[in-house]
Length: 112
Image (cartoon, rainbow, N blue to C red; front, side, top):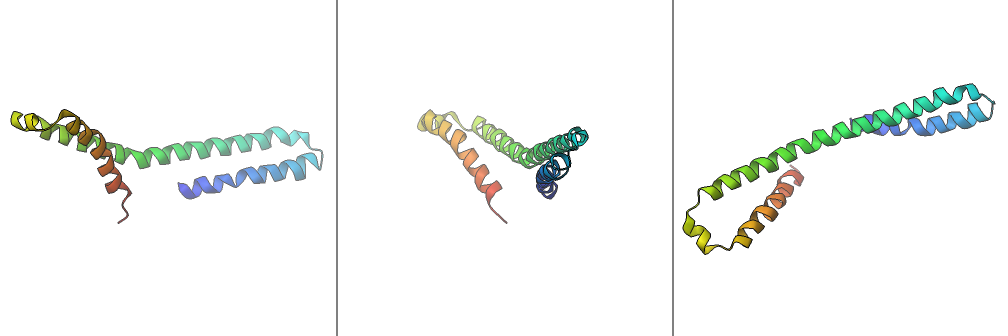
């Protein structure tokens, strides 16, 4: 998908070249609409592929973060009340709010 998105970037310089070399230089206004439509289609397809690629890349990361949060919440629910008496609520909130995204970043961003 990345290669196809990159190759679609090359369509726009080709369209610009066609506008200059054929439409303007040879005075062919009948080619304006078809050339512009080709450029618009290339931009639309590229944006669609980029959106799909981002969704495909981020979906596992979001699911992983959700599973970690659910597991952490389940663990917190089963801790004894005495544990909550000895730990400050702001520290517990900080761990849940800050440590999960940090761990997610380390696991997802670390190369094999």
